[in-house]
Length: 347
Image (cartoon, rainbow, N blue to C red; front, side, top):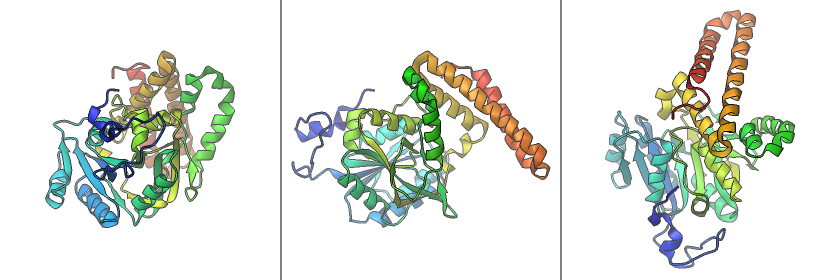
């Protein structure tokens, strides 16, 4: 991916460093460099964007030097207007169309100057000292490229934001990994049931609230813009792990997440088909045609299993048949959509 030359802070510092080393910006006198650049991509979040900005300024104050950059993907509501009225002095990028999450995020990163970039959804609120704790943790652990935190939904429900990589990605990229399928299946179950009260290394973390080291972006590249929505966070974590950076989760930094508000229009069938296309792009990037075919077959099998699962549930839980029927129909239409798109859909 081609990057904006202005993005390379090493060049701005006038100092050449070896790959993998870290610049001490304070030591070389770059006082204009922020501690943190907060990147927000907005799309139809109503009043939540302004509330998110309020929580950022209330939490940080003058404790750390920071900037906020908002890229709006041509929202049709008043979310951007409300934010600009209350916070007129932050940076806004107003796109003429919905460019997707990855491309809009890259716009904010290329205009940022922070030593760390904090990717934050507009439908979130910073709780307490979450950002300061993440910043301190990154300062103490220089081998971490991406740091995630605990996400809680209204009602103090934990949002499970840590996951393993799809095992097909691991198997297909190296055919010899086929002999490790039982191990990866075990890891899937283990990570899915992980204790969200424990700090741990993980495969990937949802992009709702991620702190990324700038040097990690310098070494591994920005978000891949072929992913319009979904999977771009997984692919970024995968690429950074391949370049030697750790992906870490800590529980003592907490962000409130009003889950999926900015993607409401993509819910249901459309959302699942967009996810399918994104995962297929991921398999195609790392495994070529074999990945596309294997991913297509895996999706068909997975959807078929869910369909049979809901059929049996309807038999055993007849009183809940109305709710179960709606889910069954959704998976049926999803399977139909995947079959129609095929293994190599026109992206």
